[in-house]
Length: 207
Image: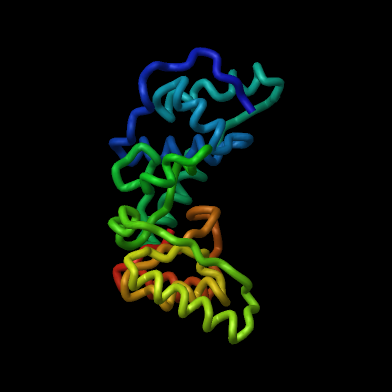
């Protein structure tokens, strides 16, 4: 959405307070700010609070009228909901953020995380598939996930019913990572929510 105008030579500062995390959340949830725009604004302004202050004028210069960033109330509501669920918010320049994920283009600036973040330090293999998988498909997913898990890989999938939960379940003893889009705003269906809570109680990771 926006162009770099005066890029900073300093890396974005990591959050040190809850207010900083709220500012990161507000910036990411603001209209027309995706990961790419978020990272450009942080490079230019160094802190999320400074980027938020500049955002209406930047938007106006880009031809967007009557622009308002995400409100403090909306960000605080999401933050409180995540904390109540037992999750914590990790920013992309913090040590617990997955190093491999940080290297991709337009990496998510924020992750809601539950469970054991040390799983992020191990080798990963993703297994995903159909929700309405055949019995053969489910058996294959379980066998593949179990074998890879025994070989030391962390199994990554999407927590959906079918192949995803089959793969998670087969790898649970040694570690599995569940990835869901939408952060704290996403409603998780009951069955998938139960699986995710079970993984976290077992010391495994869901985010």
